[in-house]
Length: 106
Image (tube, rainbow, N blue to C red):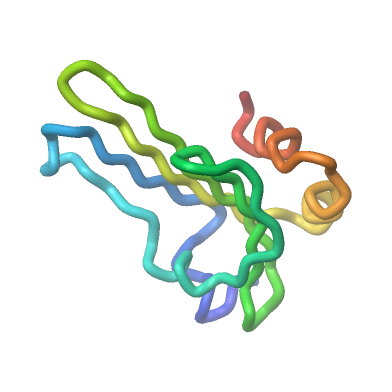
């Protein structure tokens, strides 16, 4: 069960911003900022992170992505709460991208 610190994130959350359409922008819950970094890979605008809640110890996989389009950009952020088995795979994986494809479904 989620605690007060990470509960607002839920099982998964997404944010997205499109250049030129600020009225459609969405953001990750603020609670995602309070998670502790366990591992990070990637760089620039494409980053994957394994993070954990400092209060209850639940692990999450988060990501950012960026795409340049003529007329604007598209930024995406996501975070998924991991079960114990997926957390173990993420901790052992050579690349977090392997686990990210699994939890995102593509």
